[in-house]
Image (tube, rainbow, N blue to C red; front, side, top):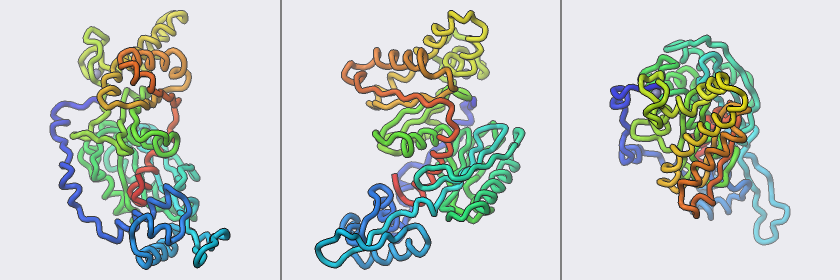
Length: 382
Ligand SMILES: [Zn+2]
């Protein structure tokens, strides 16, 4: 996507003090505490929950009763090995009886719908040929997909995640998406009004990173993810939270110039990162060169990306980088060159800790990331 500077200037994030001032009532805060704890820690008794949340036992008992009634929790019964005091029953999150409904709008040809349980497993999948649908048609197709998913399952659908290309703000408005023909459209509200469900909307690359972080690799709270598929885009997760950027454009790196003398780009300038290291341009160059030059071309593109990422990795003191792209291209010389170019630019002590993980063309990551955003919004977990 190429954004004009005028489009970017029009987008501003509301400063965080205002966001923090949005009142969250005590009950929903307490529910989040309990759900977040159970999601992270597994089955617990009510006294354990009270001790860990610092809520009173009657409060925990009442909230747990409500969560059991609505099907969010399972009662596992009395702990057999309890030896001291009154035996206490454990409760756990009902991961299979609840699901997030997801619609991935990131492909121009097919919208993918999926139901994802709270463990991140895709339990149902549907797809809709869209043939480049834009504008109001996008919303209508997204709503239709959600309604089909909800009608097809006996699980309780806790919320909807809509993944979109382009700039998406933190209130669920698609601010700019050329591919979907949407400008300043409150997609969260539109889909919620038509389905009766809570809806979160996010950028597809950001949610790929979230999918990795929650369901593929939970060893770090910080992650830099970069995809070279469909252009070049990135996402940064710091302390388990996505970094949106002041203009919701964090990770929109495709048209940063890395080689001023390079080939002309669709944006009218020369040597953009996308032109130099993006999969479609790289594959085109490979096709037009002899086979024995392939590895050198791939290495050179990987080096350019690594050189671009190194200062970001250093500035944020990141250790985990996820590389995403087409199967058959990412492993071998490409990933090796990225690692080498990052490592040789960093201080040795930092370079020794760098871990680069390659994910080959995996559309399920966007779906799992969208489910993760729904779980985060509905259960209050990070
Ligand atoms: Zn460009």
